[in-house]
Amino acid sequence: MNFAKCLLATALPCLVCYAQNPTSTEAVALVKSAVAYAKKHGGAKLIEETNSPNGKFHVATGGELYIFIYDERGTVKAIGYNTAALVGKNRIDLKDPDGVMIIQELIKIAKGRGKGWVDYKYPNPTTNALDAKTSYMEFYEGMIIGSGVYKEKD
Image (cartoon, rainbow, N blue to C red; front, side):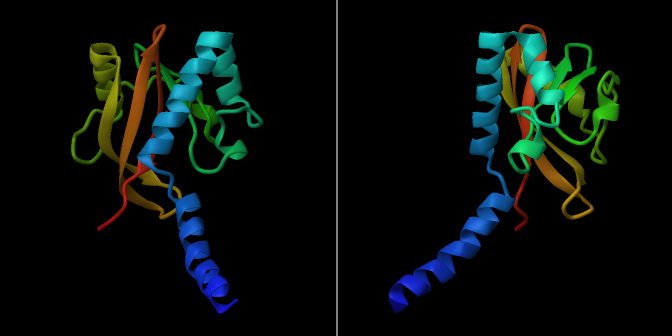
């Protein structure tokens, strides 16, 4: 019985950490799920589902990961986070402190390769700091569909 308690005591904190820190693998899976959803139901339905607080791709329904969708000009079509004010805004000139043109890079990689990663710094609502983040995106029918995770600090 002591072994079981010990195992639970060591595994539970790891599960909590895992739940609090989504992985890049989970981000890829979420993006692939969103693209599959768009293929089945259409891009407009994906945008609706992402913007809805009760939608499948909104942070409120699944933890920390959410989908963001930009058009090819850098306008936010959908964002599955509590930032609905961003929908419809053009963010093509969004730049991190190191000079990374975040949205331009997302568009360049998505349109050039069809999918890929962009690394940048972004405000982390959990730490209230500017932290390293990486986002995976895929290009589908004029939409850049992506999700990002904050990188672990060394």
